[in-house]
Length: 224
Image 1 (cartoon, rainbow, N blue to C red):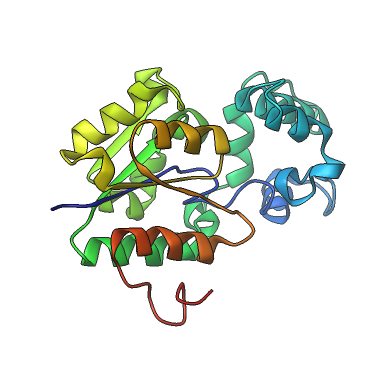
Image 2: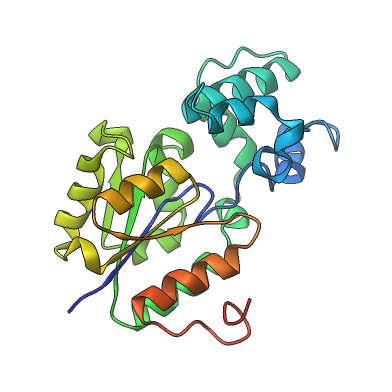
């Protein structure tokens, strides 16, 4: 039986923009402390995030609004959400990758698991050349990106396509995402799921590896 680890990208493999405000401000030439919205790290102070969590706006609406706000700070008109990600991330793409993600991916691969990315906006947000600039992406057997499929999680077709391309049973996949709506979609599609906690990434990855029957790296993800 072959098992598979299926990961969302933004927030799960990469750190969120909320966690990298200092890097973003440096890349954009903004004064430290300029970017104050904190999403899940301070829901009470981010009304727009609360609207997104309540499904009053979409995740893409959230980031488009933030992109426009940051563009105005620079005296520019940003009408695409991906402009924020691509400009704020700067040239060092590896600086925003979670070290816990690298450890978990290596552990799953060493245990013979297949690996997949299932994203709603990988290339849309990060740019089409991002995968080439990030060596970690070579570890993945399958990348299903709604930038091209136009099928967004939690649509069941997104999960079905990923499972089919992996060539495994849905129940042998462990799907990890930081958005509850996507987790619920994965559960309905028959995958095992881990709702990723961006404030406890090591614990979330340890849970995913445990479901795969893979021992977490000692002193890294084990007993987080």
